[in-house]
Length: 326
Image (cartoon, rainbow, N blue to C red; front, side, top):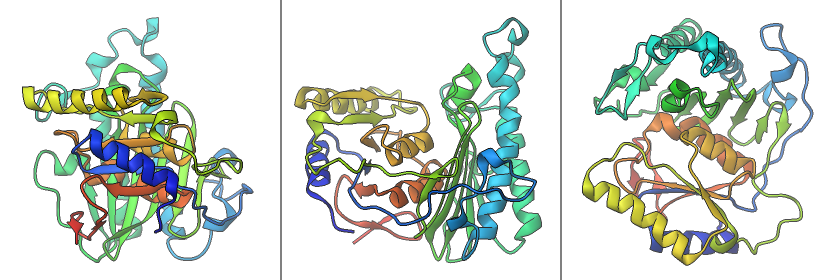
């Protein structure tokens, strides 16, 4: 994909500021597709109806299933999100069944496990020949290699810390790869009631309305100095890791930007760039580099809305194993 001038400026400035891996930003490319929502089956409410452009053709059946599963998994999260901080929710966090992974900052809840089980069983029932990679079933082990077979990549709760704290910026993420490439993505944020959906080549949508990373009256003058820059600090706690992350932000601020944000959900970071709420998000400065479930679904949503995704160290692409290739 050709880089517009504004994206080149942002990329250049951030590459100087950081030494990490991935950069996600707005571009001026647009995807075609209908913007009109429509009613669909009784299992999906009108509020989250699948747009006509995505109701037929390749991966439409997979999308419908992903939406149904994401909505059901999201409903598992609402009781805690609604109760946290209220009289009825006293002690709610202690009842989540929290268990740590690498350290106290990296943990999962019983709802994470329940949601992944729900989604995996739904996929196996409908597409028994497909592969599945889930965050919780992978745990702290090696991520299974991505093959050419249809492979679902699941984050049952992206932004688990936000979820446990009762923060609304958390979501369910379900992506599908085929031929080693992300082709379909669904992300549902139950607290904000926003459903993002996309199929490769057919545009990206939020609650039935097509989204774009830029407005019609935007020109190519977006630079780092007038950009809203998002980043995530992640789980790195070593002195070197903390220094790398903080120094990257320091350099961006010293260079000049409109402001910075950190939302605590990589999937929503990408969805917010896709819908024009922020201009750029970067990751990979220390141990906070994202895993496939952190970006698979949202990568399709972002690119179909007109965003560019680039490696900060080069202009190389991604192969089916998730690695950078020449």
